[in-house]
Image (tube, rainbow, N blue to C red):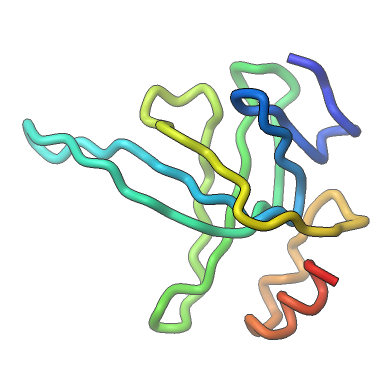
Length: 113
């Protein structure tokens, strides 16, 4: 694993994902003896870990009810099926904690312009 840009980006299956990108995550969930896949889409606000086994990232989205949902996803997880970038973001910061206090419209303006 190559360290890219002082922990502001990471590589997953030949795709470089950086802070501010909107990603679509497909995650495998076990419920009893059944297994299903759940899709989750959010903005990458944080990347942590300095090796391939400890690397994880935090995503944030606004749910339909208007509540912010953050999810920490380890890259080495066997339940991580797929990870795709749906929209590239522009960020000059390494952590986007400030978007926790913004509305969806303000986030779109600050992260993508």
